[in-house]
Length: 460
Image (tube, rainbow, N blue to C red; front, top):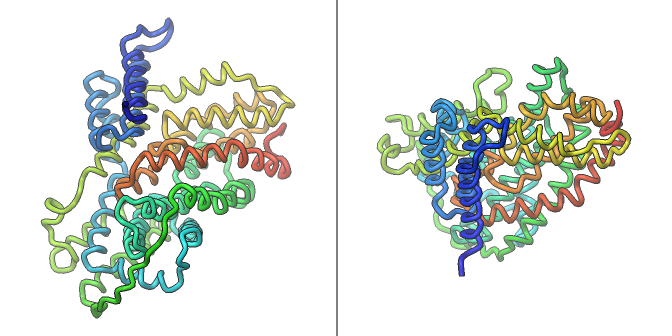
């Protein structure tokens, strides 16, 4: 009997083939059909892991070029994106941390204050990771910093590689530092995209405090309470901390050098609004210094012999998907079609809230969450006119959809964690689907009521 993942992939492949060979309806650009076909195939490959994730990215890029879905500069735009170099820098720095044993030193310190049962461990990691969002403005940068430490921590807790226990620890740090941060204006890329789009399209500024008060109490609070509980339910394992007290080597010169590199990178990440250097280039610089002759902690040949470039290809494909979706217009097309089908009714605010959120979720499904604001914000005035809402209420209705993503490719920090920790994509999807379900049933109604209390999600 075929595995469920194989069945899902075959279904995606059949849909892709249908989109590719069925004539485009009257008035529709055939290029849109080709783009949709390639995107469905790529999503099917990434979501089911029938082939390695990086191979799925290569298939996606090959199909885009052969079928002339988009120009090469769009298809391969992932290689010019900062996220790629954040991944590269994170991998190199992680290798340096592993080589000198700095991760073991940090983990020993953590274990002195950590509980010994799985649920408190997950809550502790989740909340500690969430706190970093207030000081480091890039979720991907926070994930790159956390994953190597969490890998070492899971090993010291007795979890085997690719075990459920290890996956839970990694996902607690990843989702902890990303999901609740959607309620903090400068902490994630979609947040910043929303701010920038509002400024460029409507010349309207979103205040930090206004954004935080509306979005963090319910959306961030629910994540802090419910996400660790779901992770514990899905990945519950019994920690068996390693008790062997091997001798700790005295601090050596390379330990100090690596610590200096990490502290400098951390300071630059925290102060990026002052100096203007993106977290990606800070990570790349840290990685280059790690392999610098004499000063570095890794031999230069490590770049050719020890670094796994599969994660970089994977992330390049994910970014390329978002670029192709934007370039082809498929995201805007889907949003327009949904707006034509969905009936927004002035005065029926709860219905409107769910419908607008549904449109945002659908756009994020095909364009990824960082690209979603660029499509939703220009449409916001039309949606406001149809619903009778204020412009700000419409724009803010997109925010809850970012943290209720059913597939990993929608959130680049999740993709980064999968790549750095070699997580099973099926397990990650199961977690995301579980939280998305809870979000639709529980969190969205609570967030709606909170917004109504503050004067949002209604006529302006």
